[in-house]
Image 1 (cartoon, rainbow, N blue to C red):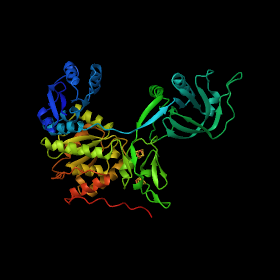
Image 2: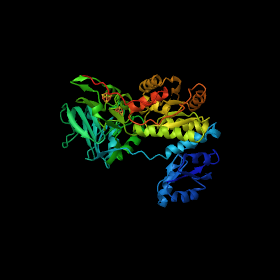
Image 3: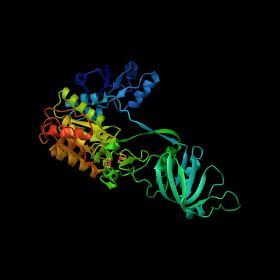
Image 4: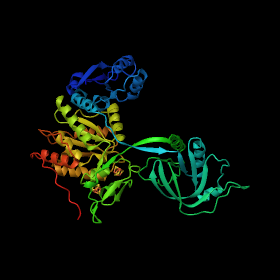
Length: 500
Ligand code: SF4
Ligand code: SF4
């Protein structure tokens, strides 16, 4: 079914070429508008009302989505051609890249399985008495709040007389679980005595108190309970009132039913964790910073409550027993193939792939485009939720699909060691060491300069006969490697060696 691409040149600041984009097929472009989100909003409404439209604007997606809702039309899809292609020193040559980005945006939306999470609003607040009690008073109308105070401070604190929320004293020694199912252990636990005259008193302390809660609001300002974050665990520095207010407001909304993506899938039959009680492989366990992976007999098990979706396990697993599902590997390779084919189909020759995360990457690209040189015309941005999901198999698949190079834009919090090891592996397997680069800059201008400088003729030529590799990561890595070395089609993958 033909999709209508509604074009806008953003107040004349770029020149999208409808003819080049229509090389994608199944696509009809409108004329180029110039102020679709404001002066021409009526025109936008008329087009959106016809359904099956895509709007070439990322910045004002919210405006158009609201417009569609107001007129009872299906929500349009969006593609950002401006920051990623149109605002560039090489905008005049960016047609093939725009076609590629449109083709990618036309792919079916990703469907990710979700985990249902339920929160009854049981909230544990940690922190100094003044801050924690104030937050508890604010949240008491929304959540069932318990404040945990340090025993020394609790003895001196000005405690409330009412029953709006609970106050206990003690020291939290252990926390596990996740949103909707936290478990905590508290030593020196003291409960507040209800009756009596004079200052409020606590029961005698006892160690090893156990409790459960749905969320934790940590206003202690000390070492986080979960170094790599956890759904349902909110933190704010008590010396920073706006941060405390933000976390408190966020906590207030965390009651009811929620969904969390199921980031990983496992295939126990492929797992080489152990046999006959001899441990063979612990790579995913070692790579998982959140501690979500644990041995489960001969295999491993991922706790979906704890998993934060970094994809590190998927990148290091040698057997394909653990995979990433949001997006899955097949979706990644389909996107790569679609981008490369559409780029070539629109007359481009040697595209480079710029892999970036979903936070730092768009910000850098947006700033480079707005205030600097933007991206070169041959650089196609490729967003992934976490850079660690783009391992050596994905890099090889990109080269085999016809990309001349793969550049990975590291974010400040990226796992540099893991990503670097995957890049080294891809360089070794592909034999194209210059084709895979990690970019570690935090200045948008330096990003542009690096990308403009690192291009052909330094890069190897892309494959003459690109392949759309399909299958598991191991199969694709093998097929891609053979294609990159000019060998005939790959044989079926060899069985993995298990410990005896
Ligand atoms: S995706 Fe990341 S957090 Fe989740 S299990 Fe794998 S390594 Fe751990
Ligand atoms: S890395 Fe893969 S093979 Fe090794 S223990 Fe984890 S899931 Fe099993």
